[in-house]
Length: 206
Image 1 (cartoon, rainbow, N blue to C red):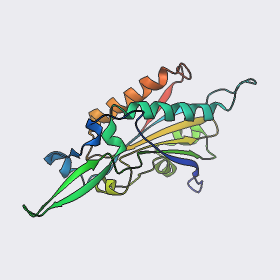
Image 2: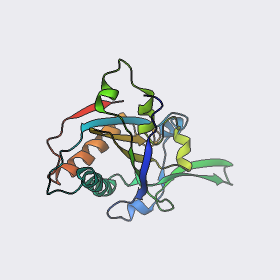
Image 3: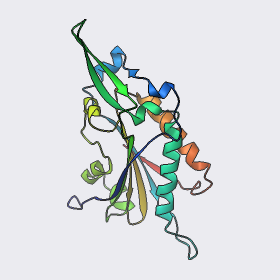
Image 4: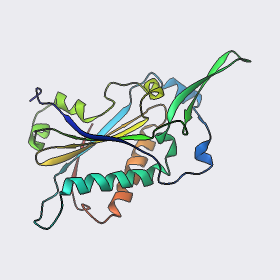
């Protein structure tokens, strides 16, 4: 099973659905945030059963992915730093460096749609988390300092034979565990307002 490869179907960057003057300013990291620059990204995922296909409906996974993109853009309007990049500025007067989040010079948060020829049972039945699951996260093994060149947030949707895995990678110098789940819950709430797939049961994978 470990020989299976995850194929990327599409990749794009998402901006907030609207911008405010506050979002155009630099977002400076605090002392505790700076201490987390050497820590790995937070990575958690949810595993769903694949939506049923009806004869009069377009591809349900494509609909799912598009609605998740739309929901992500709306959610980012409330979590705008996650659409930015880390930047370091040297201060000549104090001979020090300042690390901050640049929300202007950034393509946005990353969204990946991928596919793998595995089933839900291949993920859940083993007594350990299969190594292939690492490929369900775009920033696996990246550290927070990498946010200078990598997105601070990536949502990766991996399509399985009978399921859909949503993996979320988030920079640990920008968010802690509580704010991570606050974001995930708001993303879910925005998505549910689309009134589709709202009865799908999810399995938590970390």
